[in-house]
Every structure is written in structure tokens, then in C-alpha cells.
Amino acid sequence: MAIGLIIIGDEILSGRRHDQHFPKVLQILAARGLQLGWAEILPDDPVRITAALKRTFASSDIVFCCGGIGATPDDHTRQAAADALGLPLVLHEEGKRNIQQRILQMGYEAGQAADLESAENLHRLKMAEFAQGAELIPNPYNNIAGFSLRQHYFVPGFPVMAWPMIEWVLDQHYSHLYNRAPRIEQSVLVYEAAESALTPLMQMLEADYPGVKIFSLPSVGDAQTRRHIELGVKGEPVQTAAAFRQLCAELTKLHVEFSNI
Image 1 (spheres, helix red, strand yellow):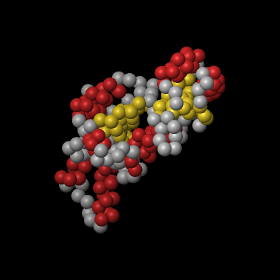
Image 2: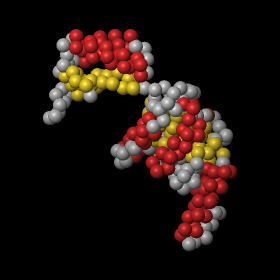
Image 3: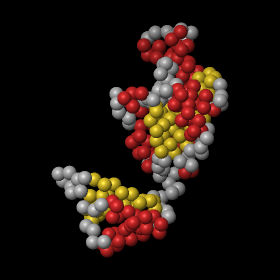
Image 4: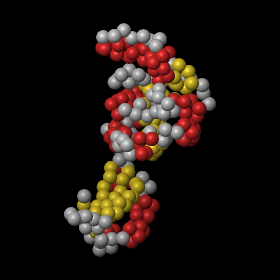
């Protein structure tokens, strides 16, 4: 089981808006001793969204999906989730009441009586149409809920709404997973070396320490730093510490210049 993130919106792919969800979700998960397994960015294309959700629903992953659950013509996520599971789209009664309460509140704040039967307000109820069997995710910002289906959690694209909703899901449903797999990361900067020359060492370490992943991040350098490779190990703490000691020892044997980070 992995934790996945789907970000939906043409505006992200076109560059009109800068995605903020990816770094924030990493932060939210890290604070709970969790990590992101994968992420995807999708356009406002119902065929692509449906295909992606069919694939992820077939997995055991926990998936957070940001965006596309509004009521405008480019919001396809609610219908796509229903289509991916072959379920009808139905009006969720509690979700409907939440939206109506929000409409009445907005009218009160504006000093006007709200007409719940107006065409505009009836259209807003589409935001409470979810696949049959969906459960609500409370929205602390405006009370217009997101929804969940089979370990998939659908929240708005607006960060001010999405982030506390994701935190609520984690704290309500997955607190038993927090900090279950402690991990550490250690690395060095290796100067003026080729990755190909370091590959046998990396392969050896991964073979010797199955609970550890080796990573290599080359850099051409800049005005402050020479050409280098950040070479490191990450994973289960005891094995990672042992692998890091061996990494440094082997680099010394190879007469490679390196420095700790």
C-alpha cells in the first residue's frame, strides 16, 4: 500500500497556476511519519481522469485527489469517480443540507434573503452529487464537503480547503500508520567523480542492505560549488547508519574526494 496524490487542472499543466499541493502534502505526511509513494497531474479531461481512477481504484493505495469537484463545466472529477467504479451519481442528502446552509449563511451575511429554489442555488447542489455510497469529508472553510470512496479522498483544488481536509482524513482514518516505519537519510558530496564509476558501489550497498535505498543526485556545480554528486542512503535507521559508514569507507578506499553534508 502506498499513498498517492492526483492533482487535476488544466491551469497547472499550462503554467497559469503554480501547483502548491505537492510540496504541502509532502510536509503533511512527513509530520506524521508518512511519505508519498507517487503523484500525477491530470488535465480537466474526463476520459483521462476516469482511466486514472480505474487504475488506482484497482490498487490498495490511499489516494488523495485535488481539484475538479466543483459545479462548473470543467469540473469532471465527481462524474469520473462514479464512472470509474460503474456507480450512479446521486445527490448526497447531508451534502445537500451543508450547501443549503452555506447559501443561507451567505445571504444573511449579505443582508439578503436567499432563495434556495433559484436556478443558481439549485445548480450549486451539483457539488453534493457523488458516486453512490460516498462518504463526506468535512470542509472547515465553507462547509461544502468533499467525498471519499474506497480509500480515495476527493477534495477541492483550493489549498485553503484541501489541506485541512487531507489532514482530517489522515487523523481520522490513518493515525494507526503514523511513525510505524522510522526512516533516516544520510549523504555526502562526492567531487569531480563520474556516476558510472560509483555505480558498482551503489549496487553493492543495495545488495548488502535490503532495507536501504541508494540515491545519486549529480550537479554540474555553480559559482559556489564545484561539480559534484550527492550520494546517499535512506531507509530503516539501523541499516542506513551501517550502509552510510560503509559508503564513506569505500569512498576513502577509492581515493575519492567527498565531504559530509
